[in-house]
Amino acid sequence: MVERRSFLNVVLPHIILMLGVVIVFFPVYLAFVASTWDPATIINGQLGLLPGPYFLENYQRILFTGTASSTREPVASMMLNSLIMALMIAIGKIIISIFSAFAIVYYRFPFRMTLFWIIFITLMLPVEVRIFPTYKIVADLGLLDSYPGLTIPLIASATGTLLFRQFFMTIPDELLEASKIDAAGPLQFFKDTLLPLSMTTIAALFVIQFIYGWNQYLWPLLITTKDSMQTIVIGIRKMITTQDALTEWQLAMATAVLALLPPVAVVIGMQKLFVKGLVETEK
Amino acid sequence: MEKRTVFAGYTLPALLIIPQLLITIIFFYLPAGQAMWQSFQLEDAFGTATQFVGFENYAELFKKPEYFRAMGVTAVFSLLVAGLSLSLSLLLAVMANKQIRGAGIYKTLLIWPYAVAPAVAGVLWLFMFQPSIGMVSKLLMSWGIDWNPTLNGTHAMFLVVLAATWKQISYNFLFFLAGLQSIPHSLIEASAIDGARPFRRFWTIIFPLLSPTMFYLLVVNITYVFFDTFGIIDAVTHGGPGSSTTTLVFKVYNDGRSGGDLGLSAAQSVILMVIVVGLTAVQFRYIERKVNY
Image 1: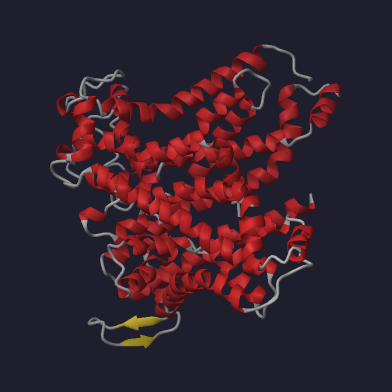
Image 2: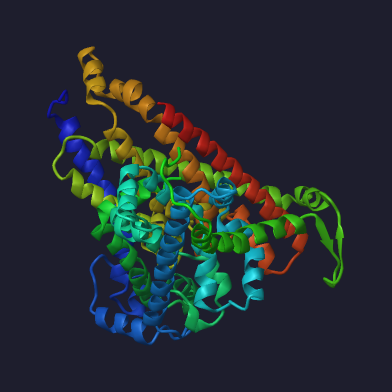
């Protein structure tokens, strides 16, 4: 290696990286500290950098009772809604895209490439740009305030299909020839050969889509009107009221911590899959 | 590229592809088509009759100063977030790429904000910068700054830029680090033998080789600011004060929700679609170039 072990090469990187880590952690740490104090300490601006004695009380109250003013919904049920939405989006996307990629790669049928392009072009249309017409269609189908309405419009996107298509292309043709000699049908080939080989790709896509689903904002904001259908990301926004005096900051911050914990745990716990998924779904 | 061996038959592949096709048509093409159709229509005050008016809605839109203001806000917001998050994450990635102890741990500790929802990130930063109780705003006030993002548009913009940057650093960091690790050591050693100091090595060898990554990230960051920061803006500023943080996407949402002119709202959506298609096309050209590398 050409680098000498000097200040510039050893100490400086540590200092800059530590600073970076501190800046990245500070907002979350402060939110955690705030979630362990009583409202008076926060409102009077006496919040310090050390956690207070109200941890259990605040988290118990927010999880099972909810805030007093804004959304009287317990956060535990919001988290359940978020979990259901994230799982339905992640699993739904994997299922429909692995099937469609299988059909496109392993069959020859008329208009095959046309269909591929029809799916492919949707890469370019995030839900934000077609939000109200999509809302109207979901409303006409009677799917407002329902899990299908919350998830199905977000399930279809080309990302998964492209990813699986790319992966199937790297699988040697000999494997299919071998299964054909063994007289395996298409579904058997899919189940016994493709699916086991695709496991890492599936897991990586799952990690990315779970985070995507859990963090959805604009769509659930429009589609849910009942408090009982609220997701946690929407719930926290409703706790921040415009009249500052009414915001129960210690509870809002506890909710923020609870809202970011599951997806952050997924990223840290499955870092390898996360990085793989992120790099490969780069369109 | 095509497979040499395939299965025969039409029924099974049709059944396999239909779910995705149906969802795509119902929730992508239908709404997008509807937006396009509506953008050429004029609805009367009672919503009972519509009339084809060609590009009149677009012409109307471009006469509105609010629309230009939203374009300006979006441009400023994108440039600030992209510039800030790209330079900070490049610095961190270069440092994490050095041969130091614990580089892997730093990586883990830096990438998780990717998983924080934009709206939650916004709330975290709002709490620190809230004028009456925020820890950072007290500090700013003790320095004599009259900090108030609810009244001062520049302060509000500053706040959403910080929150958006904080969230985006992890993504950029990962891609820069991957880019740095793919640069052959032999190149860097060769330039060191030629007597190039570390700083010069960075600007003449490493930075140019990173430029494809940089370009890709620039497009991704702009797309991110355009669409994904909606949550931050809605949670932190609601587009205000005034319209100083109203981006194009926030404006579409706000206009549409207040039940304003359907045609105008649709025209805004169509313009956004054109912008995304443009950004994606730029991105694909980059990918093609990357393949030829």
